[in-house]
Image (cartoon, rainbow, N blue to C red; front, side, top):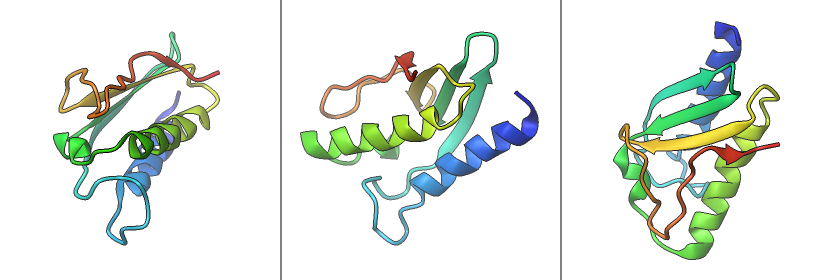
Amino acid sequence: MDWIKLLIILLSFVIFFDNSAGTNVVPHNVNVLSVEFQQTSGHLILNVCSNVLNYGGTLFEYYFVQQLTSIAASFCDAQYFTLLISGELRELPEGIMLYRFFLH
């Protein structure tokens, strides 16, 4: 994947995590720390700060995961998606862990 596609992916997630208007299901003050794409395996890895854990509720988490995976799946080269929180593989508050989540 060339750097332009990676930049588009990064910007897509940055826009998704911009909840300054309070209009989406993302907790406030979540920063994208890094995005990595492993081209040979089709693995897209998103690393965000721990503020992403500042919410609660099963339905909220369901919609949050749906939005994340929908953005990741929109990039046809991506086959798998992993969400890292401050560089670590962790569960979201309601127990979902996105590790090598199969996109398509």
